[in-house]
Length: 104
Image 1 (tube, rainbow, N blue to C red):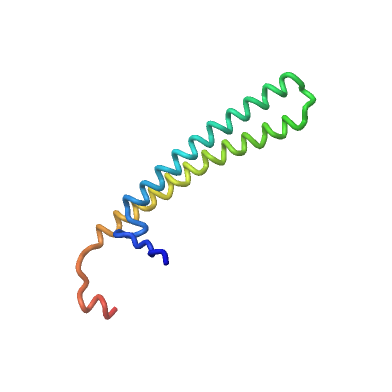
Image 2: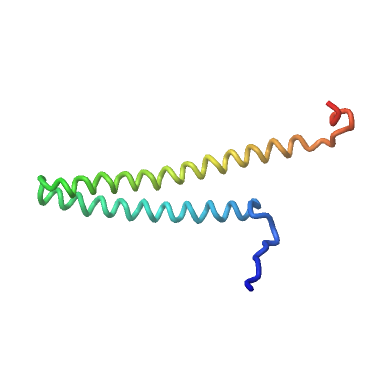
């Protein structure tokens, strides 16, 4: 029977989230690079044959992929900023609560 993996730290610890975000950004950068290479390939096909509608459609798809990869990076940066802001708010409100605060 396989042993169940139990991490020693939280699944969503700060370092683990940063590592995952770094990996996604790196992969998205690679995806964007490949999509732009595909765009150039189909662009050259259209230059050779301006009536090639299939190549034009593939050019459009490649641009969509490149933009999608860029959007992923922006979303990750936005999430990281939100996490940082939430973290800053929680560190500011670390005053111990009294029993009166709890009763309210």
